[in-house]
Amino acid sequence: MDTQLIQTKLDELSEELKREVLDYIDFLIMKHYKEEKKGKLTFDWEGGLSDLKEKYTSVELQHKAMEWR
Image (cartoon, rainbow, N blue to C red; front, side):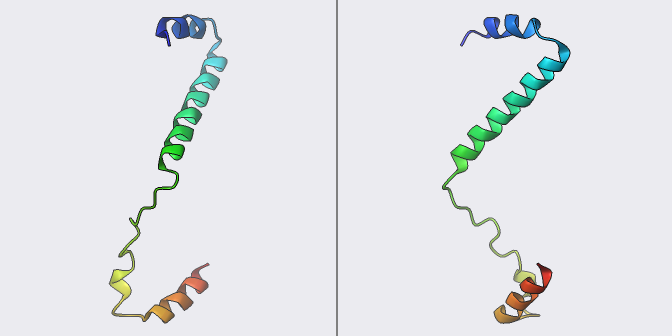
């Protein structure tokens, strides 16, 4: 895509419309990012409660999780 054409059209817009264009660009970027990550599982939460393993059993943690909801 020709960036000069985009710039020419952008120059014709009011400041309010330029803000809308920026919002839409952000939306497209986030949409693309989510589509790339879709279906990819991560386990970045793994070990998040490891500091509690000495204090609670897994069953007790399940009960605590129900209380925290």
